[in-house]
Image 1 (cartoon, rainbow, N blue to C red):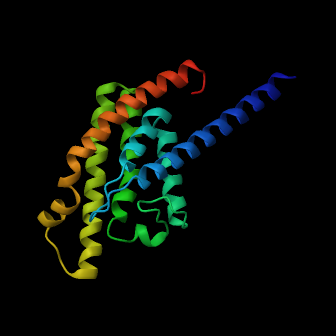
Image 2: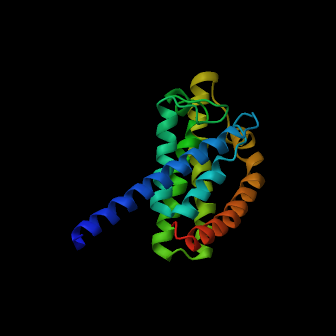
Length: 193
């Protein structure tokens, strides 16, 4: 076998492995969304899934897995909270939070690139990513809610959509860090990353 052929086979295997990892983490995000407590904004483990994908796969593949997850939901696959799917979910009251996951992942990817994956930068990127998700989701919620039911104040929306989630989301960040680092170590040791 020539060196070129071996290189092509290795490259194809790497691409296939990357696609499989991206798909697995998109499915993991769906499973995390199905673990849901119905509220104005459903309490789920989606943010844990987003953070875990970016920690284990890195920013690029993690972001791609988030995009795949959202695209699956957009075309109607029931991957969102409450086993729902469809473009209507993304255009509904809480769709901005789902879109915000992309920005969370992009921020983690940016910090990974800028700071070479240092732990402090990972933690800061997760916090900033969460804040970006809150901001995008809250603005979207206010816009959609106002069209359907009339204007609502920022304090009210924060009380419905953000404040109840701060402590659980911090717990999800810590959990994603612990699980992600251990999973990275195990997968690296097994030669799977």
